[in-house]
Image (cartoon, rainbow, N blue to C red; front, side, top):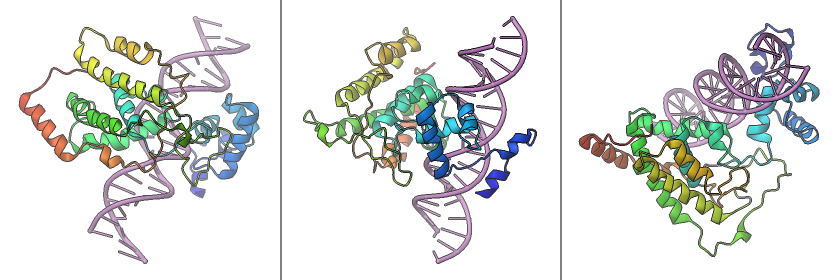
Length: 272
DNA sequence: AAACGAATCAACCGCTACTCT
DNA sequence: GAGAGTAGCGGTTGATTCGTT
């Protein structure tokens, strides 16, 4: 840890020699949380200077947004979230912060990491480029339907009991040792609605060549009363033990799908 | 138990966009 | 309009954790 503090980027500025880098300590976290509670989460350079933290404003901002923010959600990416990431990435590409807006409590960093570690790994495993049409086809025709099946299989019944839900108190400090218990404000109807929309989008985006991508995007994401800014979130209970490996397509599935694609030279699909 | 490689994820960096003077 | 300061974004790095041999 100590070498972090020596690992300064550039000695050009005298004051840089005082800048701390590397992992944050609990003490620093506490200072930042208290300072933000009093002064708000804006003017990060001011916060960095005034708080006495030997961190840059950027570093403070990042720590707050990705870790200390009360509504930040930790733990495994749920099936629904995986589906949303795949879907939204197919629309917007590496617009991580934009994608994160539709996944309450998730940070752009987390989504980016998920994409790089899980999705790109699959692409690498299949020896195709993650941006290739073939990979997108595989994603659309194998992985996403599979996810939808699993989502439907676990969708709460109409007698879904909201009493079981855990409301996370935004005022509670986050315990860094144990993951935050999944579940806060549950809204199963909106949740389901959201994924119906997403699956519709899945179909329309490839079947309506006359419709532009942004048309589809506006209609489905924004045009049906779906308001990401106003939503309360859609966390699932009991997703903590989610086995990500099961959510990927198997080698067999991928192999046969790719085999099929190559044999039939399917080239009609396009994501633009 | 130790060594090693792979996977994960927190944090950094560079760049761009935005706001204010 | 120009320039400075700041916020935000996406790419990358590297320490830590996990799994396997």
